[in-house]
Image (cartoon, rainbow, N blue to C red; front, side, top):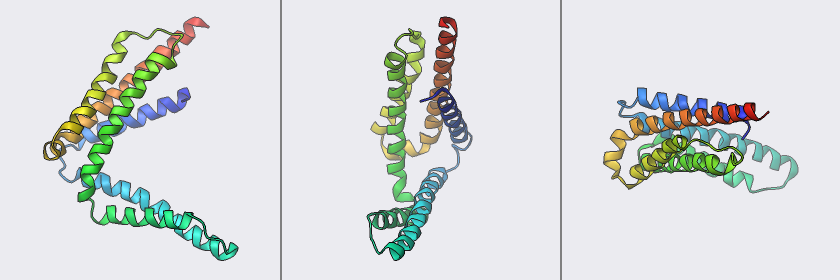
Amino acid sequence: MSEKTNLWANIFVLAAGIILICLHNDISLLNWMVMFVGAMCAIPGLIGVISGISRSAKNRSTGISIPSSLGMLVIGIIMLLCPTPFVAIFVYVLAALLIICGLVQVWSLAVEFRPFRMPLWLYILPVLVIATGVIIICSPLRDVETTFTLVAGIAMIVSAVNGLFIAMAVYNSNKVNV
């Protein structure tokens, strides 16, 4: 990832973490998050169905875009109308994303910046983010739903701040070596 993309990604993760912490007492927050994801599925699905129908009317060719767009539209509408069954899936997917984010940061510290030796304290926060994801996955769902947004928000802030520290360490080491 480029330095600007990495910076923006960390800023967005930081903002999302702050929002999760500020709204962690809202009982319906996870339902609203699922509904948001449902809208993000339904809108492209609707656009794909409309463009696929108009394209097939002109070209008389049917492709795989219409069935897949229709599937996205249906899943998005179901998530919008009935988000509760998707909350459990959503929680576990976000926990898996925490694990992946921590693993990517550990990998980037160990391999990606190989000519530079990163300080060991930069490895602590990604390992804690990985542990948070594992704990969320291993916990019963009814216990997780009440604390998930707070724990995930803290983990997202920690991950973003550590990413910014890594970016500063790389920038400073590039500056010294030039």
